[in-house]
Image (tube, rainbow, N blue to C red; front, side, top):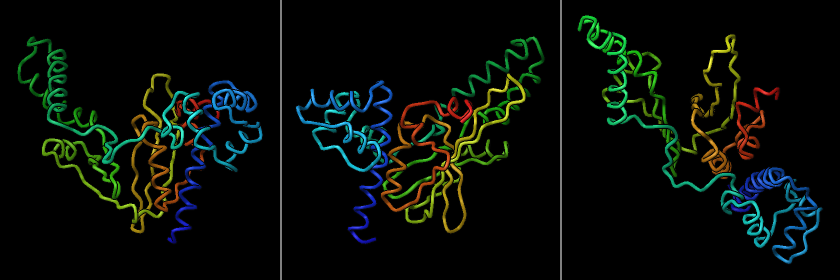
Amino acid sequence: MRPVGKLKLILGVASMLLQTMLKSRRLERGLTQGQLATQLFVATQLFVTTQAVSKWETGKAVPSIDNLLALSDLYNVSLDELVQGSPFFKKPYLVGKRFSGRRALGLTLFWLFVSLLFTGFGYQPWWLFGLVFLLGLVFVLPVAVNDYWMITTHGLVLEQYSGHALIKFWQLMTNAPTVTRIAYGQLTAVQLRYQRRLRPSPFDFNPDTFQLILQTASGERVVALNTPVHAFLPQLVGYLQRRGVTVGDAQGIMPVVISGQSLYEYFNDGH
């Protein structure tokens, strides 16, 4: 990509994130565009019109450095978060929880207690306790462990487990998840996808499905977004776009994330 074209892309991506952030923060404070312009004049002694605020929020103009600093103070967020939508994070950045020996020990001790509880703390035969304990480790332990992935300066590193309980248990015991490395240059597009879960029972508390679909020339990879995403997703989207990767958001997920709303409440409230 030519330098001028790349610069336009970077400025365009930053502008999209910034205009979303500015509007969301203003609405959170319950301010009209005119009231915000007045507060900025008081803070900076620089004349700001309602029309200028409108242009910032529609991406037709960008606030000056003085106004950005004043907005950062007014909204009580860092300048980085105001511009990019989430706090800066250093790479590599881990998304999810890596399985570790300490976590394995904690889950094993927990299931040991549950097994003793089920078998009456020695009231039942010890062979029954041993059977419950072993079956639990093989079939229950894997359920408590999810895939995780990392955002690095060169690409995304996916560390994923099998969907088969026995294979996943062996992967956990040998610390050998399937590792896939996808360089940013390999990505042809990325899609954000949120799917509501149909709940026939009021006691179904399983979460909805939120995924990042990574498309490459060789196919696609699905990455689960089952952790709080506000801390990294806005910056990741901007980072990908600056590298020329198209990020699709047909459902309008990013404005919801940037505004701090709950995606569950948003999509289960008729949107």
